[in-house]
Length: 354
Ligand SMILES: Cc1ncc(COP(=O)(O)O)c(C=O)c1O
Image 1 (cartoon, rainbow, N blue to C red):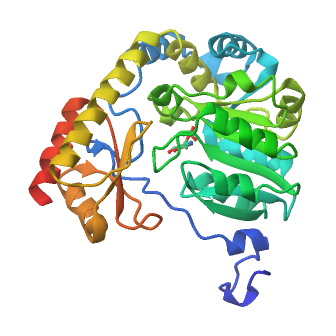
Image 2 (cartoon, helix red, strand yellow):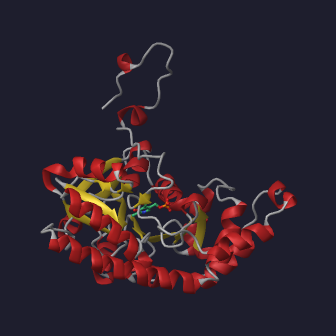
Image 3 (cartoon, helix red, strand yellow):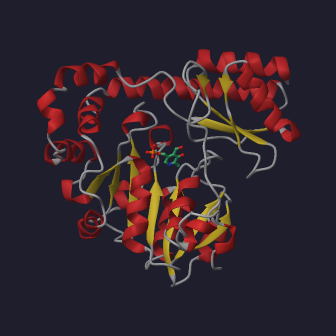
């Protein structure tokens, strides 16, 4: 469908049709500091203190003057993830991983399969690229997705666990998709891997169409740093490199990653705490008779019914941020699991207004 030139105000330059057609995506980006942030699935207590310590010690005027260098951190991260440095690129968050994948494999009109609902940025980057997008209703069994794969399918983007449902797909389920979609780039976005323990990384050698992304934004508490990794077989990685801006990951992010992967205990403790908080949340929701989706991640989608938006707003007034998702699953609100104390506070506020 061509764009409508007549809708543009005078003096505004005509953008590409793909951009004109897009619905704006505008997540709340201000006024969150100081509130109980249970709306973006971040680490709710922050990065390991060792990350800050390391940054303080290693940030120098000379260091800031030099363009980023990646060889050392790639060696370290390769070891950490159990792959070779040639098997991945560093990215400016998962978001850039999605963008680079689309830029590498999707021509104008190329077919991209997405699940609905899922992470909004898949659609965003596919739309910017002018892809032909097919959205398949999300079901635990993924049978609809398997049926939807054609020889013309160029990419399939899947979050495992999925956001906002929190539901997961087994490795066997992913293999069925990879086998059927041999001509497509299949991205398995593992932003919440540390909470689910299910990963497709060991399948990398078996499937040349497999791409796996990881991020430092969630359990590592480094969303502000914007750092992720995109893994695939080295032959594919060469092309990802070719399509990527050479310095999109900054030096601070590489320093922070160096320190973050040393402090495994911090991450393990946080995961244990979140899983305990999630149990507490289930019990609290059940007590109030609120249906919810069992989650494999650090967030839970629950059914607030017709009051979803009002509930979100009432909680916000009390300093507790949650995310309304009723625009994609009727009546649903998503809440991030932080510590048990944070979930107790959330439940106490919820009980008062429910
Ligand atoms: C499935 C999924 N992938 C990726 C991200 C964002 O990752 P990043 O901060 O690394 O761009 C999110 C954040 O909400 C997410 O839910």
